[in-house]
Image (cartoon, rainbow, N blue to C red; front, side, top):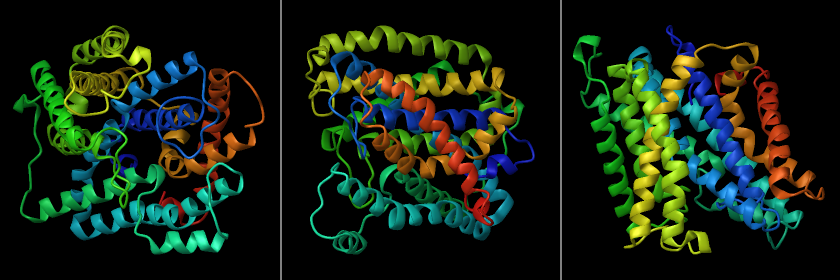
Length: 385
């Protein structure tokens, strides 16, 4: 999520494009929760009908399997080069500016006003005055609110990487002669490893559990940590540019099988089709184990498949794509208030929830990028966003 991709001498346009698309998916997941999909978000309208709930929840499950892990992989990929070019001091200052300032502004300015404003519109309950609420919030230890948990985690991961390098770790750049490319076996082992670790984590912290002070959802963090680390390795071994086309194509085909064959079977056999999802979220249940293996398997397949697809077919930019990639980070930072405000403005327009989700997505998502572009025109803002 940094500008290092854009400033690199060998700009990887397909990664810029992929990152922008994944950020659009993040916005769509939050809107799908608004209109009936499972998940946590600031604002939800009335409970959706069965079809809408099924479609939007499936949409969220598929995206959750890979999209944040993919963003951590991309961020990890550009971290070693940034450290090499800038050195430890400039690297850490840059991370504090580009990650710390948006995190601080969202936590201390945007988030408390969003929540209080929602309270004034009857969406959440608050007692007392605005200043009572703000006073309580500012004296509580809470950071990484809303979507900015990702920025917070990335800041911590960047510090960890810098510490690792300062401890004397200086890996050298791999060459084509090394032959160290991802194999089908290594990807399978990765998916199984992530599945097992995630299953063990969810024995203690099931889906829905969050570490409040940092707003970290530990049930998903094994993938995030591993993907960031793999991103730093991928940079040295040039995996993003060297993964074979056939592997990407096979990954997408297998991913389709995971979605259209394995997921329905898992839902039918495990009881989700009858509305019981309690055994999927964690604990010693075969449903929880099956879900994490499906989830991590699909996450690996989609990540690899999309990287290769974008590299081979979407490695160019027109004016619109360039604008979207340039403003994607800023759009991510500001998308929560934009989506919430827009959804509340149209909440009295009564449409079938699935249709309303589609229409709001078509309007609100471009608005996020448009507002981001305007904000970035303010002098000095591009240094941060």
